[in-house]
Length: 112
Length: 114
Image 1 (spheres, chains in turn red, blue):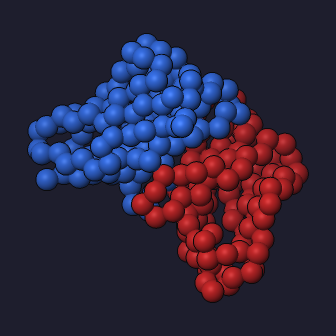
Image 2 (tube, rainbow over the protein chains, first blue to last red; image 1 turned 30 degrees about the horizontal axis):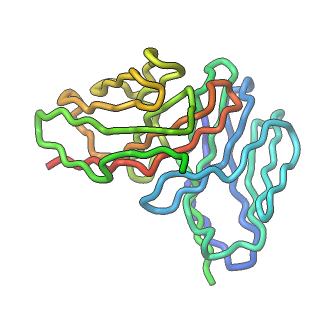
């Protein structure tokens, strides 16, 4: 079982819709959760992080964490064509300080 | 401007050749990391360093070597022992090395084999 799993997609949504990206992780001791966006040919950039169960909102982005289900998601409201990218989920474990474990990413396309 | 720089942007390696990828940061971050990304794949950790003069192997360290002689620099050498080096190499850094530290990435180096 992989440390971090994401649906590879591609996920395609129309402009203005809500895009939902999902991520599951295997280690119950995981403490921190990050979402990165990566445009084609570019390096990942941080969108947001979440540490506690529940929702965390930042503009059009909402991260949702459910540690009991070992599940973290990212919702993008009012999706724009500029949101088209690959979204990487990363998980930090308390037992391996400093290391992040990355999923393969979900490719999102927002069409006009 | 604070940030992470990687050079070169593109690098070509001949068979049997060692090449070194540069990573420099002026963020005063303690921890630095090297990842490899293959098409359609996530990031795989090669090496990481939590403090100067110390580093640990990641998941795919074979065929690579690093040094951390200065806080701001963490060069990666791809040796001839790495038989399939073609990939996108990403350097990252974080303030410290707790599990809650955010990692910030440089622009990357694309390595191609001639």
